[in-house]
Length: 271
Image 1 (cartoon, rainbow, N blue to C red):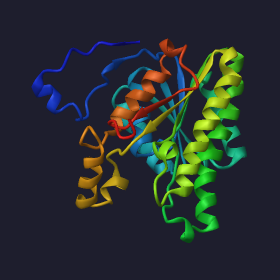
Image 2: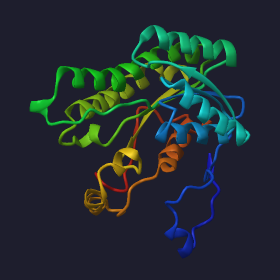
Image 3: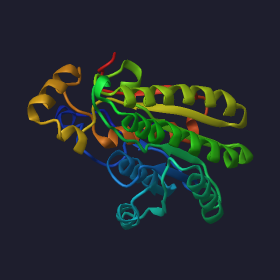
């Protein structure tokens, strides 16, 4: 894979964080990608990037209505997408989706485990339900999808699995014991499964975003967001398309010798 973009001029550098077309030139024509949590935000950006690169994208989330909206947008842009409503925490639903994807679309080349939830509160006040919900969605979900998707990938001797973790899983974050534990577990799962599947030409990697502009970060309010930006050496929040580009890099055929790695995309936050 080659980055064909030209060096940015000073004017272009000032707007480098603004959304735009894919900067990486990756050809995923003929490939099929599953993206979980694809109904909004980061998952939608990832699905759109993969579709723009030529992949047929299987969109997975619980909300059929939101998935239909994402699929319509991808098709309007010339891409191909299919909707597969699913609760990622339920093993029977996950197995059925993977089976349907392979049956309907012919194969499965790329899996992006992006679905995730937060239920933030300090440890003394965290309920059993808040712990279980986050671990079930953020860690059990990827496990279920990786287990199901690994079978067709091993059979065809090709696959790319990308798990969306977080810097919170690498350094921790107050008020996120459940979320940080789930994302740290996802890193361990990524590294272990990468060793199991490498011999079948299936790579398994993770992307660990830092603070990304989203509805969640917007809810922090201007004052707290200013403090967050001061902590980030890049002095800004990341954009969803920047995470999507990192996923696109790891999904490319030319990333065949990269596996078991965590690509941190955080503006220098954790160094």
